Length: 355
Image: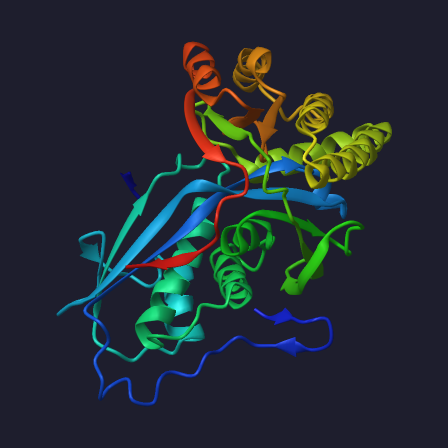
């Protein structure tokens, strides 16, 4: 493990997610320590196309972020003084959402995710912190994964100047396979709706799930290039390309069709068809100029031992992902090609408290 340094709506009405503190909180001190874990995520299909209203498919992975909270004489995070201005997502969860008024906390964070690699580490931290504070203030109450997804999304929006997709937080909170789109996607199970007032106007999303077959006997292997993924730059680059070459919108439509085919294959447990969709998606992302020589090298290294492989996330760096029934061999191939491998199940369990 490595050390880490809103307004939502249901389908019918807006709700501001402020939770009511335990009225006996100051009379009954919280448990001396609580721990919570939230997984990271990877995108199987739909990156970049999701910006233009098409669906994105994300799955939770085994690795993630763990948060431990202990009562203390002073506020600290990772042994340093806690500055709420430097950690707006954490202060939002503490004070805006839970209205925390208890004693100072010692906050420790550990992560098994590559940093700045597009694996949702920030969202996992927000979700794990939300689960830990919930456990601290409401001991014994069952965690509501949808509520935590909403809290995590609001925290990410706070930290990102009012701009945040619910994809990362939803995948991390709910676990399994999540589909995020501007509208409900056929063949999926609707979970909740979300909206956010951004500087560019109101955004709306439908968050759905795909139930993966129990006999889905395959693993994911992620390969990190060692180069951070500059999400904002990559999204801006695609927008510029589409403006200069309008015919490239056909690639977006193609990615949407590939995503639908991939979803159908996932639901049926058809590994080869899922892999074919992953390969096809990577080719379209290459056409949109968001891949890189390093990503392509890792994808090519993984493919001989995989059902399919592609970049995952914004591109330009970050990670690729392969679907395989021989994860060790794929890991070795990625390492030989210069990447750092990470093995995961397909659609891991979502956010949870520990102990």
